[in-house]
Image (tube, rainbow, N blue to C red; front, side, top):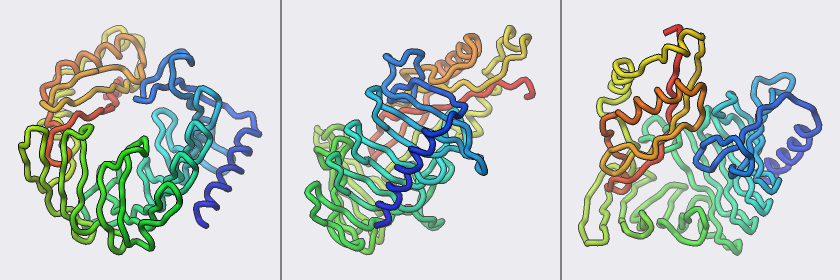
Length: 326
């Protein structure tokens, strides 16, 4: 019943938000986060409106190009957004996709995911547990599985116990599956990654990842004790800070004109650690944008991200600040 309350609340909130003439920023965005100038070049539209009376959180509304609602939520920042509180997203066919709670841009609390036919797929919960290793995208929260259903409404996990298939984004293929006990992964899990080129078997105990073995198309196997790792600059954050301080130059024209700002740059960390597809996601000024591109293009190789013991490509977004106060 809880998810019905959330959805009803957001339906009401949608009409309230659209009932007032508020100051707003409008962005035309691609699915990879890039901002484009023309609506016809975008994948969706984001509107960020000023906070309602009595709150400091901005109202965020996203729409598909056909006008259907894509997302509605709250953010503590304008660009890029940092979701806070309850957010709801929808499929292009207007069916519910997800209802989730956020803290500082990360999921926290109960999350409800839905099939494209509108039926509930699963109910998860992210909770604080400082004794657990951080999960990617969870800000160190522990995942608890409450309920899981198949697309016809048959329950496969009840009260945290049962078999849990995890689908890909299209809900057509199962990426991994295994049993859960008391809301946590338990025993042997199996799955595939990299479009089926990698198969893996992993062991869990009380939700904790123990070890895994992956096999590629050639039959080569790898054993691992870390399930996933994000790319990192060699030398860590401190090393990257030193790299920027030694290489990033403030363009003279923007300095003389007092132009400051944050350039949001995107790139892909390849499996060998090289950076490709380097692009401006959100620019400030042509010469500042060009300098941000230059310094990232000259970056030495990173430590690649890994998944199931195998290096993988990872898309990355990073802000580079140009401030005359520094």
